[in-house]
Structure formats: structure tokens, C-alpha cells
Amino acid sequence: MNQIKKLLIIGFVWPEPNSSAAGGRMMQLISIFKENGFEITFVSAALDSDFMVDLSEFGVTKKSIELNSASFDDFITELNPNVVLFDRFMIEEQFGWRVTENCPNAIRILDTEDLHCLRTARQKAFKENRNFEIVDLFSEEVAKREIASILRCDLSLIISEFEMNILQDVFRINKDLLFYLPFLVDKMSENDLLKLPSFEDRKNFVFIGNFLHEPNWNTVQYLKEAIWPSIKKDFPEAVLEVYGAYPSQKVLQLHQPKNGFFIMGRAEDANEVVKNARVVLAPIRFGAGLKGKLLEAMQCGTPSVTTSIGSEAMHANLPWNGFIQDDASEFAKKAIELYQNEDLWKQAQKNGIAIINECYQKDKYSDELVSFVNSLLMDSKSHRLHNFMGNLLQHHAYKSTMYMSKWIEAKNK
Image (cartoon, helix red, strand yellow):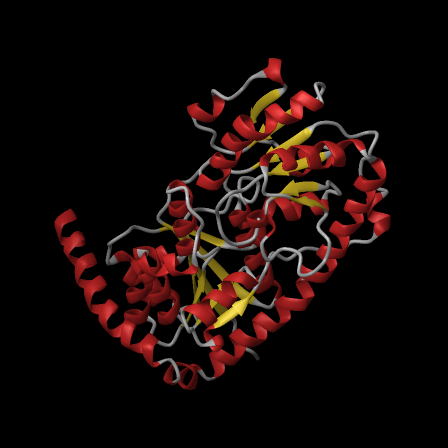
């Protein structure tokens, strides 16, 4: 009889798939491992939220843990997982040494979500009113921490091919430590479009995004100040509905119904909102990873207008499901054209299906991921022997992080 494999996921937050792409990504990972026979326990030091998913419905055990507490050592020793997955590098920093100390044979996997150092460096360059350059990454403290975390782990899940290239070509990370895993969705056909609202049955522009994520807030500001005035000038009847979880007061203050600019707050069902809109607007100016909102738009048959940052690594060499435009005035023109031209709109829909089927098929990646993890379970020793830099960082970080954590723990007593 095959022994049941245990997966421990240490979450930065509890998954909220209806609030963010990160939450959806985590549920995809849970699904992959669950379908392949893993017994999953999900723990987090975060507070419960009203919008977190009920993990028990997915056969996942939920447990709250404490930061800087030896109680985690007792817990993980008793659980004795075969695989531990860290949700973002900050979690690996906090708990990685405890995993190593108490379950040294457990495979350590890091889900980066996106490269935080890339997002941070781009944001800094944007605020300094200059173009981002790859060399900017080297001056980021976040880069040093994040790359060290990647090296300490047996495998890191990377969501973007652009980020895969940065890690291998710029930071010289061994490809055996990296696994490209984009968002994963079901295959679609053009017949599926017939089940969705038609061009005539849809109305309004829409933007959707979690407002705890700085690039989303910046995008809405940019829409309001630079793009929407141009759209309203040439298309007075236009309406934009802005949805997103956790809107702050500064977001709510942008609500201006007289100008057709509506701040709608959290969407009860993001899928319904997007599939009943005619065009998604996402003029994203900095960020990293893949944009869940744009993949969701394709699934909903909703064409989009975005920027080169927004579309980065999302569509291979295939035509976009709408337009990619970085100039504000041209962005506005393309948005109106896509909204009003039915033939153009329908072709954009078809482009979205082609992208989904080429770039985001679950079967294309999930089996390979599980196979890779199983091979690590069979021979982690050989894998780790070839990662000397990781072992070096593991040794030194283990000591420094351990003593810092133990100092905080003692202080808290």
C-alpha cells in the first residue's frame, strides 16, 4: 500500500479566490496536489477574514499558528509532512529554519506568486519618473532576500516566463531549482462563446482588482486622471465601473457618477461582473507576474485594453484579445474602437480563446509538477548536493533567523 503523502502549506494569508488572483492561484495549487493523493494541511498566522474560502469543503485541514513561537516546532514535528510549501518568500524567511530543524527531509517549495523584487524595483523607477532597467534589481534589498529564499528551497514555482528568464539569465539561478507554473484554467472552444452574453447584451467598461495591491490603485488613478477624460470627450455615453476588494477612502473618493466613473467596491461575483461588461480596461504601469484579471477577461469572453506591463508574458506570440497600448491618448482611442466595433470585438474574443488554450492548460503543467515533486521525494539528497549556494545560505540564514526568532519569542514571554 502506498504511503499517504502529506503537504503542509504555510500561507501568508488565508486564500480569498474571489478577492485576488493570488487566492485563485493558491486554490489551483491545492487542487493539483489534492487530485494527486496528497493529504493537505493549510496553516497561517493571519487573522480569519469574512471572505476566506472554507478549506474544509476542499478536504483541507485548517489550523492557525503563531509567529515566533516554539509551538510551531511541536506542530510540524507531529505532522511530519513530506512537502512544505511556503506562500511567498517572507513566509520562508519566517518558518524555513523551523522546517529545516524539525523536518529536515521535507521537500521545501516556494510559491513566489510573482517576483516581489521586480514589482518593487519597477514601482520605485515609476515614482522616480524614469524607465525601469534590469540593473535596478541589484540595488533592491527585497531582491537579496527573495533570491536567497529561492536558493534555500528545493523548488520555486514561477508564474511568468519573463521572470524565469530574469532568474536564470540575470541572477544565474540553476534551472533545476525553478518550475514555470502559470495560471491554470480549463480549455475553451469558440462554441463556449455562444453561452456567454453577446456584444449587444453587454454594456460598460470595467476594471477589477484588489486594492491592497498597489499597482491596482495606481491603475485606477491613471484611468481617472489621464484616460477617462479622453474617453468621455469622444464617447460621452461611456460608463466605467471599478470593482475591487478592500477599497480605501482615497479609492472611494474617486466615485463620480456624473462623469460616468463609478467605484463599485467588492464584486459579489467577479465572473458575473466581467462577463456582462463589454470591455476591460487595465492600464497597468508597474507590477510583476501574470495579471489574473486579464486571464479572467479572456475566460469571460471580454476583450481588454492593457499596457505592455499588463500583457507581459501572458500571450506568447499570439495576438492580444484586444489592444496593448502604453500611450494614454491612444489607449483611450483603442478602448472606444474596441467597445463600438462588433467585428473587432468578436475577433478579440477569439484571440482570447487561442491564448487560453496555448498558454494556460492545466494538463500541460500539473502532471509535470507532481512528477517533479515525486522525484524530489525519492532523491532529495542528490538534488540538494548540487545546490551549494542554497546550502550555504541555508546554513547562515538558519543561524541568524533562528536566533532573531528565539529572541523575539523570549521577549514576548
